Image (cartoon, rainbow, N blue to C red; front, side):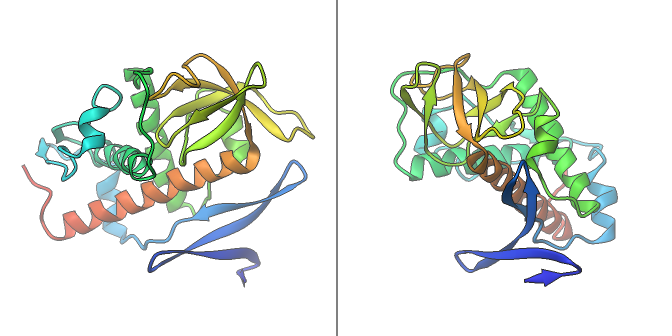
Length: 242
């Protein structure tokens, strides 16, 4: 379909419809996530500011097997003084829950998410909100321009390591660009920075297709969108309070 001169495709997720914007880059066709929720004007003023108090929140999945098994990898905060912190924990919780539901079980303990990388993820969550306000969709070339940008793996994924051997990543593992892609490349060399397993250990380099990387951006952006909408709903109902 074409809206306002832009080409979109529709994907159905259960009972929800989501829209993706057609985008060309490096001689290839991609579809980038276009935010699906409507935000009221007051939301943007509120979302970009600290609460001014500590909001205590108990996640419903705190005692779920995946959360207790992987508490060393990612542990949510007990209270929040900023909506972006809450949305970041929401996104990572959704990613890890999906990995567990898809049957992934870690064999051995990998490398947990560091404090600087948690900060970077929160920064990206905030930037996605700003992009939504300006009707901007997440695109690969923008992410590749920032060497600190973190790609969050969205599905259980088989990739090739430096020795051309297969290893496996799972939803919630983190990657950064190891070498900026060149024109004509079909895959990107990515450095593993956090993983729940030892198959593709942190510090190793793996090859990931551009299509898989774009889907990582889309899944992350979609979950940020859902998290933002949930904070809007909680605030509207008066459930965010000291």
